[in-house]
Length: 225
Image (cartoon, rainbow, N blue to C red):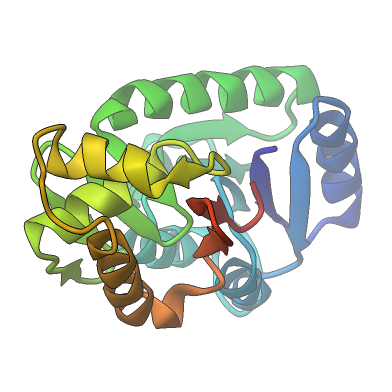
């Protein structure tokens, strides 16, 4: 299930968008201003944000810039302003699309689906687990603010588990997939590397966990998925 942040100070707009998105199977998290939206994103996994421009405490432009610094997710701006300078400001802050009020809810839904398709294509070489992004091409792990340096085998083990969230891998599977079929060492090396990964990502338990299935092996569970 995809999680959508809807930040708008108009309760009627929120109710309309919530109805359309929920009907399509999206989980909608609502905020009535920018400050509340930040709190929502800090406690919930968000896959796409829909932001009204004119909100109290923090407007949509500022909120968009804040989100773009922290998260790599699609952003749609809602606004009654359709002037080119306003749209330019939105795109410069990092928005992906712009919808002018009043709008047809179905059109907004089409744009949401299109952005998810686009991001899925762009992210073919990346794995996202909420704040954590695994870049398979550049062999990097980041939390949206900094790059987390991992030894190669730890990276390969994490990437193998993360590509298939919820799937159980035996130690033998992981040895074969990560260390290779000709590995002749103790399969308990998997346990050692799992322990190290858990220590490294102890502060990201709200994003994902590496779970042990006693006597069998390991799997990753991603929060909110």
